[in-house]
Length: 359
Ligand code: NCD
Ligand code: ZN
Ligand code: ZN
Ligand code: ZN
Image 1: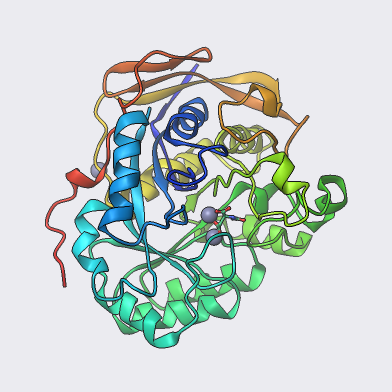
Image 2: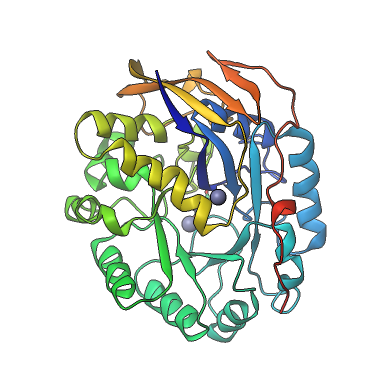
């Protein structure tokens, strides 16, 4: 048995409010615990999107009633909350900027709006961006002009990781995360997955892009599942939404890579606990840890997972390393496939944030 700290997934989509047939705070946080995570940071591209007090209250209420692990909620940068967003900073784990087309209505195209959001959001609170290709250069520059940190979501391309490396070398306050599908899958997996199931943003990349991520592990601050549940029927339908589920496969993929000598367990812990804890300023979770059987081998089967998502791009894959027990704030919350605390045991990380000023 090995003991890991309670892992942190800084990028998940839990679909509540609005699409709880794909996921809700119950199924999503159950999947998180089963995957070894004790904190998840939930994205704001829900229905309605989390952009104001009313929409945020809907998510907070649902999470308070149902979450099984601790969580933070992101506020979305929208067209209507340019001046009002900062007042909500103490209630969320950060603000999310969408600079490119993806699932949901939150894309920002307008330079002035983007600049204003970056300028107004409190520097002490995280600012995370979906920014691919040239958008990445834009958001790095805008954040640097405001002298504030920026966190880049799901980096997938060689040119992007090299740009982030160069920005870090220049002393720019930038951090980034990479998702397991960009480390373990490439466009060569598309024929096997099929066109709908293979849809994800950023799209699966080339072998060269994938290698560049592995070659620059030291530039990658976090691993984030970007758990983006959509049903198999939606993925196989006429307008397949982009996104892969990931909460219950991320740790297994990483531990398998550890076994294969591609990374060390220490590198894993830095990227799944130490760095996200620091970057997002998350509270300590006393008496919290995850117990792993590092030698247990298991086969990925979507039907055995707790997520509301009924498929996985890793179906049939054999992984090494299984979560046997999760202890959260002194209580056994997960053991051998069973959840031992009630719904709502999970806490919002936001009240722990102090001295977050508004602008
Ligand atoms: C995400 C989703 O479905 O919400 N999809 C995805 O392909 N990653 C949105 C996102 O993270 O960009
Ligand atoms: Zn994204
Ligand atoms: Zn996402
Ligand atoms: Zn700490």
